[in-house]
Image (tube, rainbow, N blue to C red; front, top):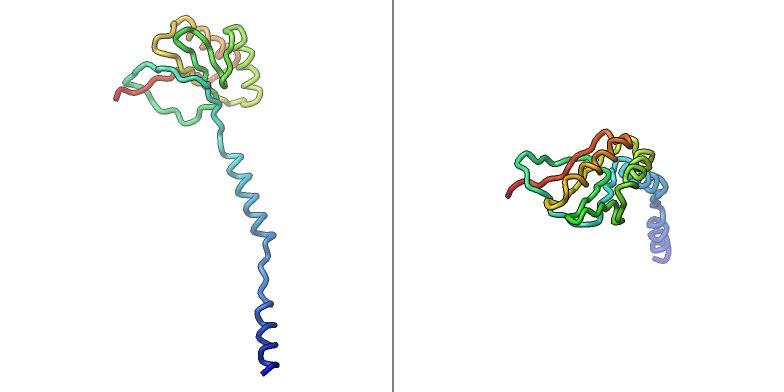
Length: 137
């Protein structure tokens, strides 16, 4: 009887699981998702966007520039002066060459300020600039 129990103990220790290939696959998937994901840089302030019946959802947005009703410009949670918007957009284009910008202006903001931001984006070389609006409910 003692011999029979000794054999059973040796049989159960034979199975082995190779984790190296599983870990490699997880890292490959992680890199794939990081490369294919686009990160949106939010403005950092909430604005009341105007209503437009022709508003469309934009799939790829890389940077949101907000213009409040007081005329303050926010990018990534920081307040910017109108004179520094162009330099900020040039730096953004250096990091993201095919980046797109959405200007989210408050419905009570001055049109002149929004046009100055739009002009600064275009002068910096941003090809894809949009103005945000919301659909009527």
